[in-house]
Image (tube, rainbow, N blue to C red; front, side):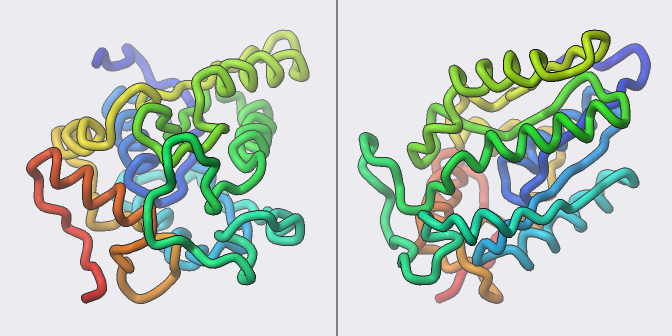
Length: 228
């Protein structure tokens, strides 16, 4: 990866999970001046994710950061992450299924809000940690969707403020992401992946299963503490 000859401002979407932490590490390694944005949408793990966001920003010295409330997503419902009447599954979905943990158009809304902030602060790029190759089957993690969002965002912005959406992990497997992150010194011990907001990762939900599989395939110890 080539470092920037001079600092350039970018917005990084940071959920607090391993993928967004890796993207934050990549942006820092490349020499960007980082503005970090986090979203609370009344998800089950919101407190843990916010804690991870703050810890990651402290680790990378990110001073410009905001946490945006999107509680309307829990009002809309339709996801096990925001609706208590829908149980979080304990297994990974079939590859052809849209999982119960999919939050309708969440990434589109997050990117739109990040684009608004980027326009205000003068950032030319948004870094997102979406993964198409080895995700849970979310339709809003596809490269075609990200490209369409970039086009739509630029159609609705000031002509002089063209924006790029950068998704450096989109075609990687989770194990590859872990290896890159470890090489860059990403503090995975500070991250939170579990769909639940308990004291420890449950180890059973789809996000925990993907995380454990990633570290196992990478041959790297997972610093996460799981429930027994």
